Each structure stands twice: as structure tokens, then as C-alpha cells.
Image (cartoon, rainbow, N blue to C red; front, side, top):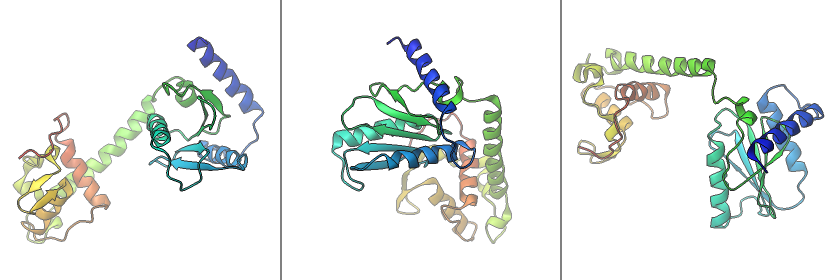
Length: 243
């Protein structure tokens, strides 16, 4: 089938299917997607395994295998490839089904009815995700503003004497984060006598020269300091292990 005709056919299916589709609780795409997933699970009275992507928004249903069963390498690679492809559509809620005895896959995006997609190239029609556009200008502005907030918080912490206890701040040794070289991590650090990440060296500096308390790795403060340091090296190629 011609690709343009196939896309048009999918659009018709979506429009007609949505018109006759029962409403799930809530109006958000997340609620609709959750409804589609729940309804999909009701259809199975045999073995299935559900694999969820790291963002929690993409789920792949693999037919023919029990939950918790070790998938054969070929089937596991197929599911992983599908999840990786779906991750390109970052904000979408997606339920995909890998049928047991068919080549194509079934796909539901943001609670819309399932459509058949070719499983050989995994190129999803953009109208399923953004109405034919990748991201809006408003989305880009919102994401940029959120990113800038974190960087600015990191800047303040990096230049604050309160991070330590003796009055020394990070910027006194590293003005504008100079000579921090975040692109060279992970690497062996002689001070720590082990392989270190950027956050390990941040805490080493806080504990030693600044005589402060280490910042938890998963804290918002650590994320902010790392974000600020990384922002000063934008465009510099990754060169981990370099000394």
C-alpha cells in the first residue's frame, strides 16, 4: 500500500474510532491511555508480558509469554527496539502490542483506538503524536525555561559560601566553572582512588577544601550544580576518561 494512502487510512480509522469510543475516566491523554491499557488487558485470557519504558508512558504487551518469564533474546530485542523507537515521542502515552502470530504490531497513542503499524521500520505517523508536527514553539519555550531555572539554581549554589563551612565557595577555585571538565567523567580520580562521576568530585570538593557536608546524589541541589557545570561546556565533545 502506498505510504500516503496508508497514513490517510490510519487518520480515518482514528477519527471514526474516536467518535464511537467509550469515554474513560478523566479527559487527559494519560487517563485515556490508562483506560485503553486496562481494556486491553481484559481481552487476554492467556500468557502476556508487559514491559514498561523508563518514562512510564510507553508499555509493550508481548503475547505468548508469562509475566516475569525470561524472554528469548530475539523477542527481548524486538521489544527493546520497539520501546526505544517509542521513546522518540517523549510526551505521548503509548500502548503497543506485539502479537504472537503476526508481523505487524498494534498501537494506541494517547488513548486513541488501536491501529496496525509495520514492525519492520517502526516509523510512526507523526499525526498520531503531534498532529504532524514534532514540537510546538510554546513547548520548546516551556522546556527551555524549566532548564534555565535549574541552571540558575546551580549557579547560585556554585557561587555560595554557604555550601561549605569555611567561607570558600566553588567559584573561588573554579571561576565560572573553569577547569571542571565535566565531559571527561567518568574517570579514575587519584584523590578518590577510584572511578568517579562528576557528582563524586563535586562532593569531594565540598567535603575537603570547603569543609562542608556532602550533597545527596539524588537531591535537587546536586542536579542543579551538575546542570550548571555542564551548561558551561555546551558543545564540547564527550571525552570520558581524559586526564
